[in-house]
Each structure stands twice: as structure tokens, then as C-alpha cells.
Length: 136
Image 1 (spheres, rainbow, N blue to C red):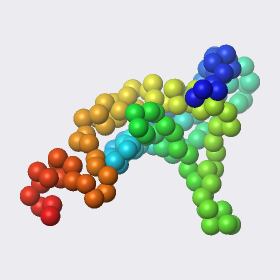
Image 2 (cartoon, helix red, strand yellow):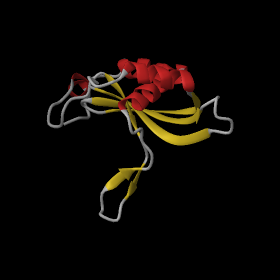
Image 3 (cartoon, rainbow, N blue to C red):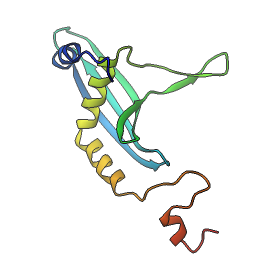
Image 4 (cartoon, rainbow, N blue to C red):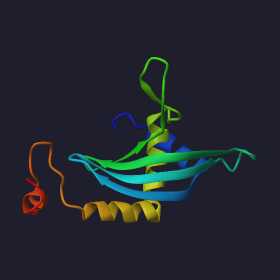
């Protein structure tokens, strides 16, 4: 993220609270990523009394070694899928990603993902696949 303004991200971090209400573990390895699970989060800004925003089902994954978030999508009239909610700035995405991935349940999922056997691209058998007598 070359164009991340760290001063803006620091202000967001200080002004906002990102609470993880629940983390649903669902480890699912892919060749270049590992899906960790879903986080239900609540965003609050303590200086703005009454401001609280709940976002359910934020997907957490590791893609090529980097923490990534995915937001629920809905089917548009044009047949394409669009996220229902998403951060509009790099700084907001960085703050959300950092806060969610700092949660102990997400950290445990990251550690568990690190212990999974590596997945291969389609057509290539991984060591785990090759050792399985039921794979042909």
C-alpha cells in the first residue's frame, strides 16, 4: 500500500473502536490463500455519542502472505456481485484489517492456517495428496 497516509490511519485508529463481537472459524485452504473465517464487528466513535455500526460476516483470509478482508456481496441487476459495505479509503481498510487481525481468535486462526499442508494449483498434486492412497 504505497499510497497509505499513515497520519490519516493513525487518526482513524485513535478516533474509532473496532470491536470483534464474534469470530466464526472456517479454515479453507486454496493454492494461494487460506480463508480463515468470518468476523462480526461493531464500529464505534466514542466522540460521537450514538454512533455504532454493526457489520456481519466480514471474511478474513491470508492471500499470498498478506491479511485481507472480504465483505458480503449481493447480486446486482447486471448479474455482477457487489460488496454490500466496504472501506472507501486505504487508511480505513488498513485500520479495519489491523484491528480484526489483532483479535486473539483471528490470531489463533492464522496460526492454525500456518500448520495446514500447502495446497497446490489445480493439476499439481501436493505432498499430502501424493501420500493419500485414495487419490488417483
